Length: 514
Image (cartoon, rainbow, N blue to C red; front, side, top):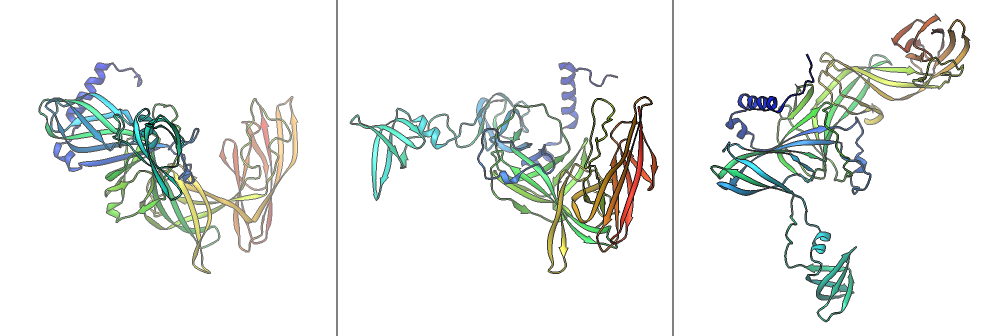
């Protein structure tokens, strides 16, 4: 069966008609949620939104807000019987006009014949440019004196006006404190507006549902973890708090809206880059009782989070809402990893026979926190992608001190969460290539390493030594004094338990064949 078989327009028409006939909710149910609802989608990389950009003005080459939203509005409108004009105001300035959907819930015959999106908003520059060659009046202050000047506006640029007076003299004026204009020019409006030519058999006041997509709005998750020591140096507990941050630069305010968030990578057709920057105000936070918080459910291949109370999302703002109540005393494990090679070193074009390939060494031992996202552990909810910040209580003065942060991708229930915090101060490693030989005739290559790990702490630790075997895909560890565990086709792990102030060494030899 070909899943990608093209459908004809007739196929689509039949599907849409069947869906409308079978899936449409009762009018009473629709009107119960009358008002504004908004579903926000994020395309932000985890931890990739720089809120430090807030307050900056848009500029060429500046990043766009990585997300979009579907806005639905149910309101009463007065329609003309037959054909008439309807103006729909208070839409987002970054609306995509091609996504607008209009439905009269009272008159199924009503339809939009034409649509205009008017977005030429009033600004001082636009007003002055519209009055070129028209008479205006200007107040100009000079010291304590204010002079009122009238004349025909010839030019307006960078705050400087060029006026021709009634006597024919040309004056260049800067620092005008008051400009009097006779009217608002045609074509300029105070709010973005959709103007429809609507045909309706009945006319009169009707319940109308309008939906559209807008850019300039996104959301991401922020997780705040508090770590506490446990039964030994390698185990502890964490309190996990989660907040949703909503950045709204769409040019619209959504008052008392029903709020939904979609977590997951929803594919969209590519669009030209919109070169707008972020600008806004300081974040506000809000939280409520559990029954009014976010309710999560699976939705297609994504996850949908619905807030149980109305939310107001002002334009040019960052709003924060609690994602779920803080999970207390979640068991976690501190994991120390020594990756002496310093990450993957991939070769291209065949066997890597250079003796120095991958022989480098670093001393840092990385520190991770690991916990299970399961109900028995006190978690067990889908975690949207976001930034995780970890703090630990200083018992000397009761203050929380920051100990590291990382980002996570969308993490389903039942999966493991691994957070990199930094490098250990008192645990160090050393990696040395002790032997390398190659027999090109027999197509055999052998390489040996000695890896030392030193624990300078006053307590025992467990360190995982991670080695990357990247010279060729066919390999075998032929000698080792500590048992290794194959993690994947290019990685092995050795586990070392070290007493306080102890040094231990691992030696191993790997053979590559091709």
